[in-house]
Image (cartoon, rainbow, N blue to C red; front, side, top):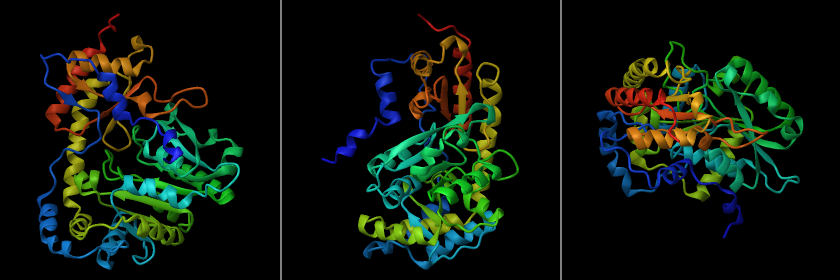
Length: 402
């Protein structure tokens, strides 16, 4: 067996199942889960129809690179959303959801033959695919902590120079999971300068880019490069339809950026067997071409957060994020930072599931930056999320039981 598999840690949801083992929640309350970031809004009918109309494509093998019509759908969207002009032939590539691509990109980029062992820099807390992809590529992971004083933006200045010298890949998540923080232009300028100095690739995970609460949409990595007068060298942006269009089961997204990396990534994916099905491509073309359903989806989240946040703010350390569909809430002081105990007791007493923040982070540089916080995914309908918030608020004012 591949010995690198032994470096992987249990996934957060497996840890959550273990935490709840043996707990029978109160029968007085119906179950409400805010634990998993799986979109629950209905899939738009026109996307389903496009899937049906694409069924004839099942009779042939799809091309790993996708056809020009699909790739042009990506570049058209990038033009409308960010004002960017990318070549559909060389600067974009279809992927089977951003999760698959985030993992595969590390296998393409990381040169594990280097001594000392290469480093992949990840935000902390983070989406666990970053860690797993780095470890299975033969790299070490350096965890860059988020800064609560800056709305949980990543503290790139905390990364030592000797770490940057060994770094081959940096994962950026903006808007962030779990914090919802958006990386501003000055932070991109800093990261680009470090990439220029040390030669590492930047992978910008932007799957939450279309769920935001203020009038100005979040800045994207490619957009930041263009604003700074740069090309896309050593920069790859990854995005997905899952959250934008409520199709997590479609497994559809794309990557865009540095044409040389895209070329090598295509070679890897050709051997890995990662071609997008023709009917998924048909549905994807329809989805990327339409913004009406995206605006409606965003408004649903805005109404939801407007209903839930005022209920929780008086009893928890929580505020509206920059973007995404998560609330990153601090547990009451009486719990002494024990987010896992808080989540377990909440589940037992009120049948509401939240994810302990410490499960989404690692102990690094002397602390776990997720400790004392919980992630709430407001993916259910407004009524259910509001009911969950009321239960959480009622629970939060109680003293922990012995």
